[in-house]
Amino acid sequence: MRILIIAGGSSSERKISLISGRAVRDALRGRGHEVKIFDFKKGVAHLEKAVRAHDITFPVMHGREGEDGNLYSFLRRTKKPYVGSDPKGARIAFDKILFKKYCGKSGIPTATWRTIKSLHDIEQFGFPSVLKAASGGSSHEVALLHTAEDLRDLKVKKILKLRDSFFVEELLNGIEITIGVLHGKALPVVEITPPDGGWFDYENKYSGRSRETPFAPSVNGALQKKAQKISESIHRDLKLGNYSRTDVIVRDGKLHVLETNTPGGVGLTPESLFPKAGVAAGMSFGELLERVIAGA
Image 1: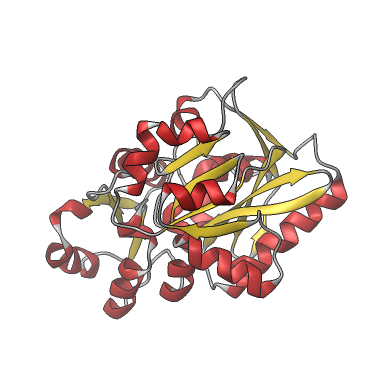
Image 2: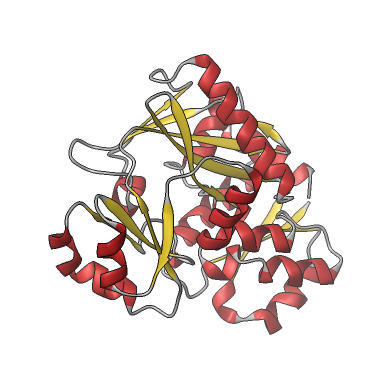
């Protein structure tokens, strides 16, 4: 098939998007497809012509440009097959505040949280906590706050200057797991272990220094199945389409959902979690991508 990959763009996620895009291109070319990458930085005006010249469009766009639902709305209007999700569901999953509200309404357990506008609001919420921008991604717009002293960190000031909405949530120390969902069915649970003294931030995600272990040996089978069911439920409710990935913290035998990544937010690099879950399920990277595009 003729497959168009959309990658790049202008967000803070541009670099990793291009890495993912090239990995997908090379794997699909290796399976006999004709694959081209379109850099979203060229703009939508050029994109429509490229989409119509291909059989399937496969966005690998991280960040606002690829995850907030607008790109999926555009692709839906072209009436050409694409890899992705329902635009409205993507918007809810991408906006962390909307997602928190969705979890509250749906009875999905998450950390205690509140929206904030100032340092004073954060102090009132308390510590340890996590500051997040609603539209942030890949841990760029996230700051861990162990004490009030951390509010002086330059990263905190940079986050609060963004044109965005913000919230803080309780910092949960526990076991982090992630659950990939492929066409509505959960893949094996993967346990994430950052380097000593670190956390699963941007650098540790893509440097290869974190350890990702399939079948989550530190979490019992019953909790793993429960995490898979929750992930499938979120995927189904938000109509996330071909695939998604939900991140969860396990603390004191209880699950707390951190976030759900839409197809645009799921990394597809050699170090990414979703492909590793696919391998655990018996699929090579190329086979996993074939399954993904089969549902376009």
